[in-house]
Amino acid sequence: MSNSVSALDGNVQVGAVCVSETGLRGMISLRGNLSDESLCACVTDLAGVDFPQTGQALVRDDKGLIWMSPDEILILAAYDDARQVIDVVEEKLKGTHFLATNVSDARSVIAVQGRYAREVLAKLAPVDLHPDAFGPGSFCRSRLAQAAAAFWMRDDETIEVMTFRSTAAYAFGLLAKAAEGGAVGHLVSHVVSHDAGDAGG
Image 1 (spheres, one colour):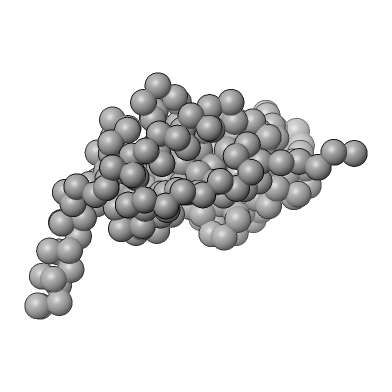
Image 2 (cartoon, rainbow, N blue to C red):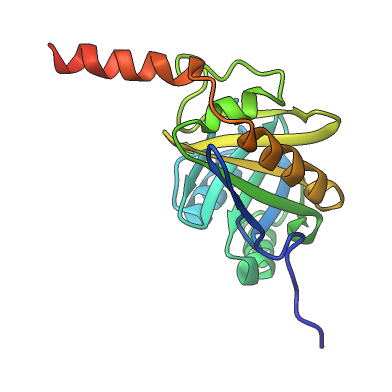
């Protein structure tokens, strides 16, 4: 029996930020009525986080919930637990209308980590990444140059980018090249001055 491998085999490149593939991730696409209380209770119990609102990704360690669309939630789990998560969903939501699909091997996740993470993404994606518009827990479906992508802010200096496995190498190359270009300073200057203002009372 062959072992599963991630799309980029843990590739890492350091420039203005650190760009790294996060490795195998368990990802379960769950489609259904997101206002159904049984569905919400099921996924929050599995992930150990609150149910995300529109445009949110709530992630803790290797678990989390990401709002993908009005009828789709993405459940994050340890890679080896993905099948078990689907079993639990199918048991708890029996009799309701839903579709749970293991998409772990169809996707790849790349972390962009460092003070200039927003700037690296801003060079490639048509999204407002200013701290006032995109902060920890924010989620967006967009593109990186010509590739479809989704990304969320895990903390103040970490953005995780999800792409299709087939375009992972392309996306990683774009991010690594953007990081090589160095920092502009535009999207961090606000944070620095804001912090300084807070410190001064």
